[in-house]
Image 1: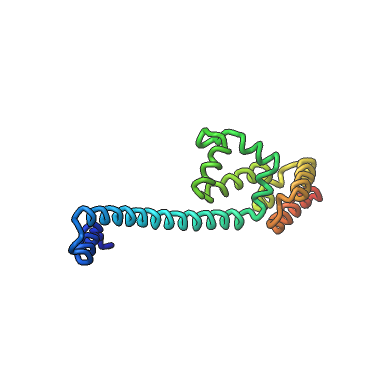
Image 2: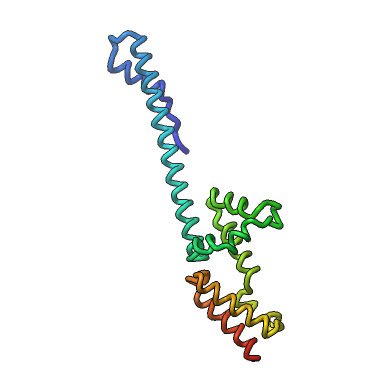
Length: 180
């Protein structure tokens, strides 16, 4: 627990010991001036601590996003993702952009990553789903369409940093097309 310093008493003792002959009004002015300087110094220290904490939060936020989606900035700029952000979120009832913008301001990486997961879960199946019996029931024609879309997404850089996942998805679609 911090020991709270009585600044006024400390300053008065200091000035009393240094200037026994000074008029009391001058001592009082000096004490008030020093009290204000002390308050400003405390306020600045609190701001510095807050700025450092914010910087740490921001760095961790950006690291979390890079770890989950190394190319998240490129994905963000795609027309498909922008259209996704313009939709109303089914849980909150707000536009996804507003939900995500709020998460960015709070450095809430979990919410932002969840939005990317929802986007990708809706726009293509995950590798685990691609190998499931449910995905094998799609038609060969549908698998060809998905494979074509997958190639377009790769050319736009949406799979950057996730090459293994891309290869699994591509392999699963080829199995459907080849009848395996």
